[in-house]
Image 1 (cartoon, rainbow, N blue to C red):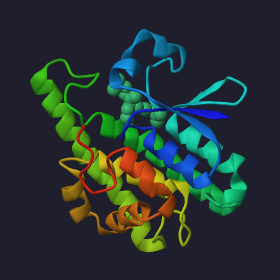
Image 2 (image 1 turned 180 degrees about the vertical axis):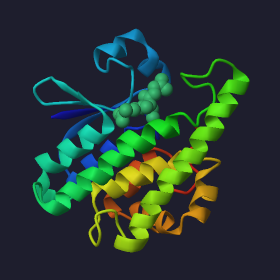
Image 3 (image 1 turned 45 degrees about the horizontal axis):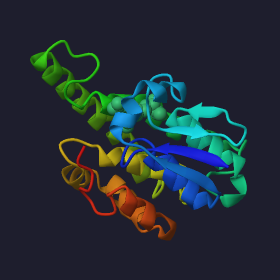
Image 4 (image 1 turned 30 degrees about the horizontal axis):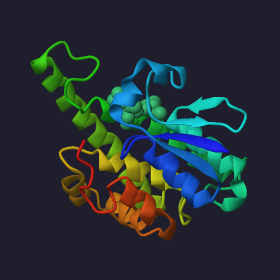
Length: 215
Ligand SMILES: N[C@@H](CCC(=O)N[C@@H](CS)C(=O)NCC(=O)O)C(=O)O
């Protein structure tokens, strides 16, 4: 069985939703931020990050993009991605990894007091730059939705939409103000909230309603 190392409304939210949509058995391990920051968790994730996915043979997969890509292809019959190996799949993968490698780390920099700040004013400078950069990247996603949507993989809902939904929860200055500026992403986000299989998970993460994230 899979094991999901999970913190409410952190980066495990997308893998958690994907596991629910796939309807596969998994053990959910709720953790507190303190447990994630404790030295023991480094044995699971060498950088002490959430998410991590334990595999049935005891190995652990890290990186949210890799976890989601793995799950949807391992259970491709559940239709959470285009047919693996197809050209549509290439585009799906590209958009998913664009979010996990270009957008997610930039969002992390929008939280004050981050890893690279020397002092408070330096932190404010980094945050301002990072917020502008996330707006630019969210704008690229918004344009894709406008020209090829309504979902990131076109006509069909996929795990990439869940991933984008997760990132919007953390947008600055707030999810609500963000969604007012990006109408295509707002429609996608509302669509994710209406997925029958996701209601209970989103409730558990405290984000069933807009603005639930307060990290
Ligand atoms: N590249 C990683 C980034 C994961 C990440 O930044 N996770 C954050 C939570 S959203 C975390 O665990 N931070 C550790 C902490 O705040 O102590 C991934 O995509 O899985």
